[in-house]
Length: 95
Image (cartoon, rainbow, N blue to C red; front, top):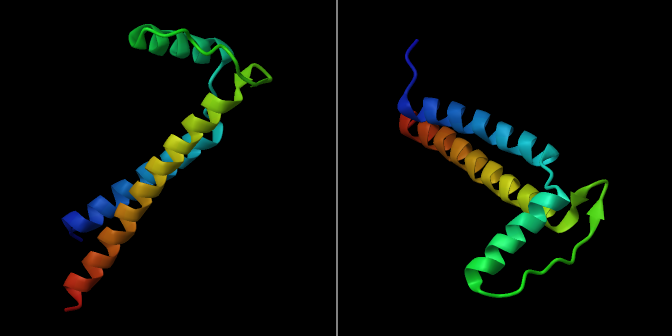
């Protein structure tokens, strides 16, 4: 059995999508990491760092939600590539 390039792309994108969504479900940003990132960003911009925030069980809520959104977006794009590859493969083989 030979696999076409589109089939391989679909399989790889599907697995990568699942991994991105799995990671999004458990990624968390600690309060220390969030403050370090804010300080670094403020230093580059030459401004005072924003040290406010909401912490829940040691995890910074705003940065954790941002990280989860980023990985959910990556998962969605990879899933779209997988579906598009499957649809294109079907269209090309049945035309």
